[in-house]
Length: 175
Ligand code: 5GP
View 1: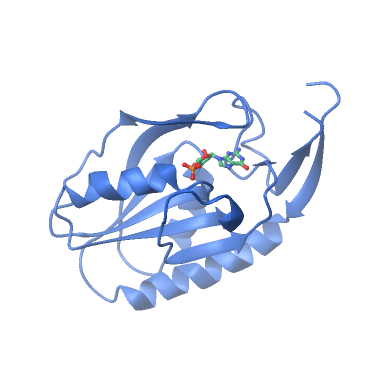
View 2: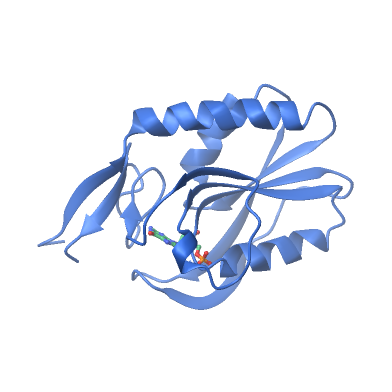
């Protein structure tokens, strides 16, 4: 893409340090029981893989596919389930692992979908939060970083499927 540039907002070192803290907190908050980490594809896949390894207890990893953003930078406002869970979460503690909370529309929808599966509890872990953009209320139990209203890529987050493999979270400027 011509005319665009990347500015590092959060370095990989900052991200790893924060994830280590969150992992320990999750371990302390869930001393026992069946804990399912549900990764929201695709953006949260890198966060999930680091968070899972930072959490010092047994967990079950599962995946859900959601599409709400097209190839551009703004949401269609429409949430579609593209892949469902492989395992039942009935009676289990569920931790939804998401890359970023923006308007809150996606997580609002997802919480509703998962609650219908009769889990023991549902909470959200989100690496990034843009609180000024919220349209729907979302209770995020574990937040990595609050960030300003800028479009970010890297560490799992994409723009038209690009940049997911960047180690840092960067602001994509000039597109
Ligand atoms: P929400 O439903 O909260 O508006 O949007 C959540 C989804 O929008 C995220 O899972 C992510 O896919 C996408 N999104 C929101 N903000 C950004 C951003 O700054 N960068 C990227 N790459 N995706 C974003």
